[in-house]
Image 1 (cartoon, rainbow, N blue to C red):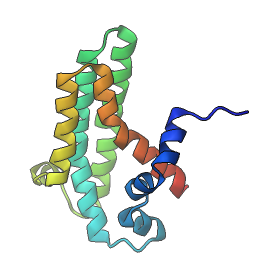
Image 2 (tube, rainbow, N blue to C red; image 1 turned 90 degrees about the vertical axis):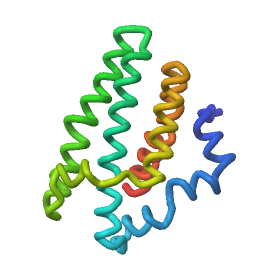
Image 3 (cartoon, rainbow, N blue to C red; image 1 turned 120 degrees about the vertical axis):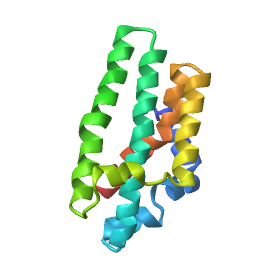
Image 4 (tube, rainbow, N blue to C red; image 1 turned 90 degrees about the horizontal axis):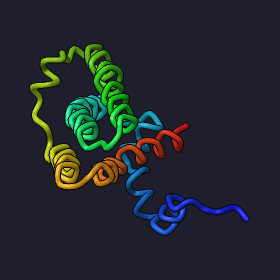
Length: 150
């Protein structure tokens, strides 16, 4: 008998909630090519602002680490955000005439602020595990969406 992972059991027990989180209208319309370009542009700008806070969370993970191995893991995540993901956003937005300065001057939407500050608050108040648990819906959700779209 194959043992089911905790994640798979939780996902199965919360199928409706999980699917509403990972397969909502925005994702489905992006997948089938019917998402209006301005909606994707708005998402990309907000995601850029989100990544700034996400980078701070990974910097906090380095501070919260109890070993050099954990610190290096946090550093790799931080470098991936700052050197790869954010650069991809900047290059994509540049194609639409959105400059890096315009990206950084755009106000964060309430949803962006709510989640990112929750993550940072959880990380500041708790330990490294608390921080990673707060980050996990985004990390796992994006991975699940990518797997579903693939």
